Image 1 (tube, helix red, strand yellow):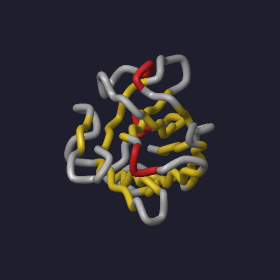
Image 2 (cartoon, rainbow, N blue to C red):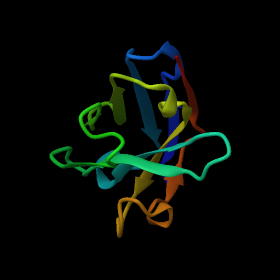
Image 3 (cartoon, rainbow, N blue to C red):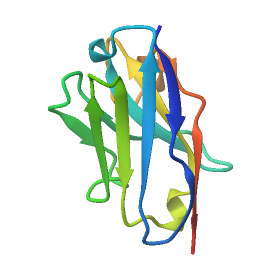
Image 4 (cartoon, one colour):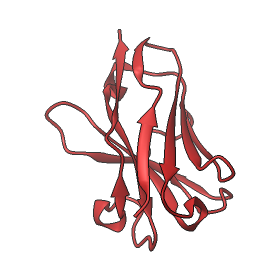
Length: 124
């Protein structure tokens, strides 16, 4: 399995931006579809968005459309989540996940490997 490490989280004011990174190691990164999920306190983990192996296709949850952008650099074995116009409701632990055989973007069971998560806190 591929190992994943997220970084870039932190505290930001509402309206601000953050870029999360997820560095992969151990296996061929370009073989994996990548997803981003998040989990707010007291809530279940939810899908944020994902990107295809080559990076040409992306898919977003409604909550992320128009504000978040996912990209990847296969040469650097890294996937990114650019978050703009952040609101307090975006406060959560953000996770990246890798899938070898994606069945459903939103389904956690589709993903083989998960990072440890990075905290994003948006203050009002």
